[in-house]
Length: 228
Image 1 (cartoon, rainbow, N blue to C red):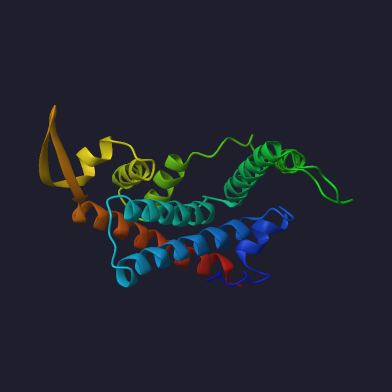
Image 2: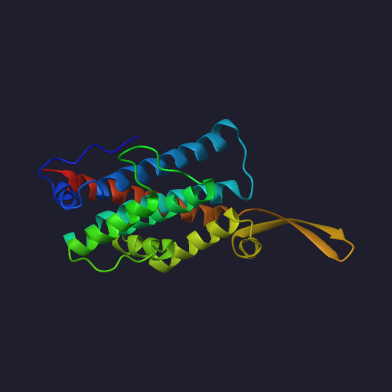
């Protein structure tokens, strides 16, 4: 499910050349593949297992939306400097998260050329400084989705709102049931009623449409940026 390698004389390859091992292509291809695999998982859940619950479709499509939006965001920076800055921002966060995991498991460096996530994080910060790029912020998923939706021709606020609903379901929050579920039953209890909710087809369809649009835009932009 990997996208092809960019041509050596492509704009994407030129973006990555100054970033040495920390180019955008690795993240774009990984995010794109992850999105496709999540779609495949949802397809099998519906078509093969024939199982729909109020949470799983939202959770899987949330991941799809984040994956494809990330690929779009990396590809659609207004110029090379912005695209490089976005790539290094994600690499810095990746190594920061790796360092957190290493601290949790008490990872010890053993190989002669092995470095910790923290050391790699500092390397990324130094590379950004050497290239004259701005300070690397912590990436915000909501901001990435908003920016990606804007360049992909989607309503950015409505697209981000769909992501918030999906995130709410993924985390088992209560409020999404009131905003994105359809009540189907009410069972009396000692202090009121237990409401039975099912998936709101229209809102789930909108999120699926968003994911498809981001997929198509990411594929088109990657094709353009990776061509010689």
